[in-house]
Length: 323
Image 1: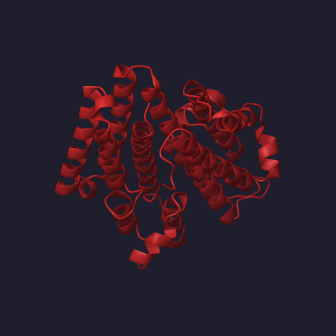
Image 2 (image 1 turned 90 degrees about the vertical axis):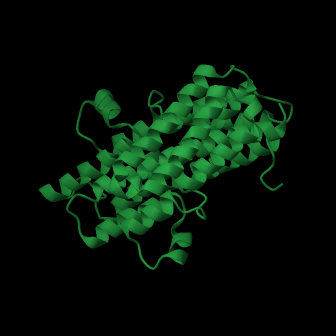
């Protein structure tokens, strides 16, 4: 397969996954903002949305303060923000159009229709009238694109590059969300469960971790796996080490390693080795060891390795990022 074609397929699926992840994050944050909380907590929560995407600096160049309205505007419809839902869906559609001949008619029509419907929803004010409905629509269109792709594409290199992009983006997003949410917990002074806590503090903890799980469709899965109260340690274990959780780091990296093996070429041996090592460390890791060494340091190192892996995939198979 031509590098340019593989590159378009890789980024088409990665941008779609990024749009869905952003919608999930904003939807849950909007729901959490409806709970009783002080102004500082509310501002910190919306700042966390920007921190997950490393956009707080760029945001503050355009806006004087952190407000729900401005963050939603910036993360949904701002064309200058490369991670906004508008920009991601536009880029996904442009990449799909560039490789239309490599896609089935159903896949192309799904991406094209999604883009046209997005323009209509933004023009008619669906986001302002019912933001929850808008975010559900974004998630549904991403699910639809994924299902149509798996259900109609030939299982060849084109499909494998699509899946590599999707799972690489998913691993990156899950790690970022975990890192930011645990930082928020440490900043709130709730580092030790041995410390006395009032009913309000315990309720706040419950909703915080429930929101994180909901943002990755993990709340029901958590209840099935643990059948107990939600604790931060178990949330970390589920989202990092549980291979049956679709959005966990292990499940995502296992899929990346498997698909890299299917598209292997003479230059990709080192890339495959690094992906395999990362997958093995997750498969045989223990959450106790991760927490003992520091979750932030672990996730920061994981994100560095994911970024390195993405760069190596570009060099081995796609159009190099520096080109």
